Length: 251
Image (cartoon, rainbow, N blue to C red; front, top):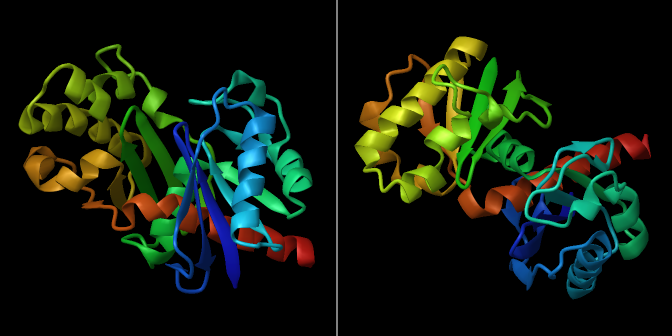
């Protein structure tokens, strides 16, 4: 099935039509600057522009930088606080005249990796950690997503939140070398291992591209692998999510 997948971010809103059976993009990716201020109405307007660009009339999946509960944004990161409490499934659907289904952006990336990336076919518990400005987390059990985990906010034994200790932003701000930072990150995923005993840990985000520079610092027993879909993961995962939600509606 072909679905329009959209990755909504603080600086850009990107979309492409995705074949949800293969995970391949069937159109070129199109990007529009995120409006400032990024209010619900303004972001919905850009989403409508994307729909018109692709001459699209079917389901739309959106990876959105917030915790999403039954289509309602419960938080807002890098967008207007006016999103908090907004039924964005309803707003985006009414604005675009297309059925729109939203999920957390990290969850979208996780769905892509579990369906078409390094997590494909993996049973048991899988934890994906996106290493960027913060530490985003996605948790699966036998391929089933537990949405909206915020495990980067968990306090470590040193009394510091995980993402305030071992994110890529912290590495840059404190000018840490990859080995020194890798030891910090190892402390974080060691705590995750002790809490969840995953069968696989997948690393996403910008720092995952430098996996070879810090992998020797990781002492966890769980296999750790870098994500493979990178910048396309959010678009692909959002499309996969919309396909699954639309199938339920059709029933």
